[in-house]
Image (cartoon, rainbow, N blue to C red; front, top):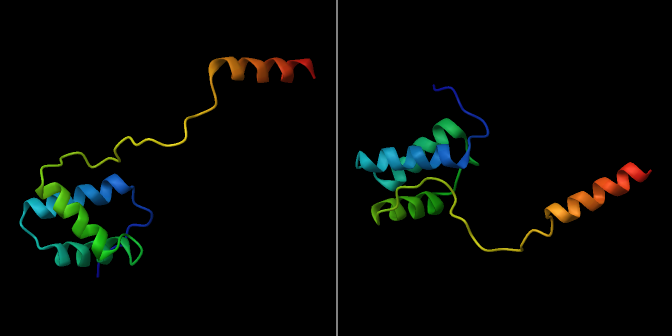
Length: 89
């Protein structure tokens, strides 16, 4: 029986996938080992296979890639205005 690790960082799990994949461990076995250590909710088998495929395609980064989304509305000017209003009260 192994000690389980709760709430691992995504990059930690991906690093384990990358490591085991480099050792030519099959994706199903990688997922089985992840579940054994991190628990049932660590990642789906399908997602583990996706990461194996990405690493096989040359990806080396285990962190999330920057992606477009809603731009932040917070800027230095807005922060200054909020701080000014706080000081007024």
